[in-house]
Each structure stands twice: as structure tokens, then as C-alpha cells.
Amino acid sequence: MGKGATYNVPYRRRREGKTNYSLRKKLVSSGLPRIVVRKTGKYIIAQLVEPDVKGDRVITSAHSSELRKKYGYLGSLNSLPSSYLTGLLCGCKSLASNVNEAVLDIGLQTPSKGANVFAVAKGFLDAGVKVPFNEEVAPDDKRIMGTHIAEYAEKLSSNPEEYKKFFSSYNKRGLAPEKIADHFVTIKEKIMSNFKKQSKK
Image (cartoon, rainbow, N blue to C red):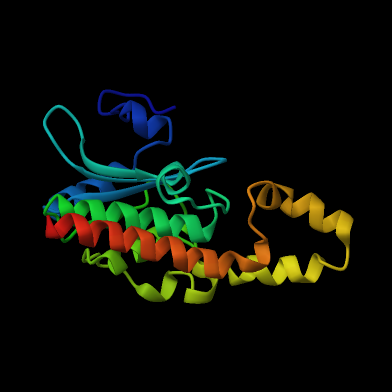
């Protein structure tokens, strides 16, 4: 550990590896709300936040569990399809809150091509929120729809034990994983249709 009269102790959240303050300063300086994305072992969480003297203020948020509770989504709640749909849902909520532009804040996550965080950002874009980022790093449309999941399910279909091992949760919820892409389109249309109806009121 550094010593001496000129040594400054880093902020607690920096010491704990939770906040990159130099990056945060750049994002805050943009003057735009930040899209904060977090992935847990089970869920995807997207929040639109803005800085305040007392701390970040959440403008609106979406939790992937809402996809199941409100829209009947039967797939995994922390997959690429659910990441996109959570971003789409939060993006629609943002527009309803009169926010049409934001910057993506990935925190300390490593920015790798095709990551869930970029699927969320793509959802915001498709909702109508302007988000400046290179769309080439986002997952392609087929993966966002879950075709890779369907293809893997079809591959395992000849091995019932392996199929059951990987996809028992899908089948318990009443969704054949081979049909995930069609189900994704249905849920996407429900979300878009719901907010179109609200905007007309």
C-alpha cells in the first residue's frame, strides 16, 4: 500500500472494485441519463439513472422478472433474448418518461462482443431511445431471438437425457426451446403494443 504525505486513499467503491470514477466522470459530463445494466445469476436488471447531489436517481427501470409476470415470457430470465426484451421494456418506459436519449454505462464489466449488456442497449435502440454505441458489438438478430438456443435443443433432441437435463425448466413452463424465436417475437409485439396503447391515452 502506498505511503507518504502525498498519498491519497482511493474512494471506497474504487477500492472495492465497484466504480471506475474516471469513466463515471465522462458519462456524467455527457449531461445524459445513464443506462445501467446488471446481470445476476437469474435476472437482468436495466435502469435509467441520472446524477443527483444525494446520489444517483432512478428515472425508470425494468427487471426481467416483469417479462414473465406481465407479458407471459417463458424463457430464461438472464439469457440474450430476455436481455434484449428487458432493454426494450426499459426503453419504452424511458420514452413514456420523456427521455429519448441516454448513454450506456457498463460499469466494470468487460466489453465483449455479443454480451448481454449490448443486447439490452439494442433493446433501448429498438424502443426508440438514442444510445450512442457501436451496434457491431451487439449480438446479431438471430441470437437475440434465441435461435442458438433452438438449434442446441434440436441437436440434443436425439439424446432425451441430455435434453431433459438442459431444458427441463423450459418444458416445466410449457415452452419447447425449439420454439423460443417465435415466442420471443410474440412477447416483443406485446411490449410494443402495450406502450403504443398507453401513448394514445
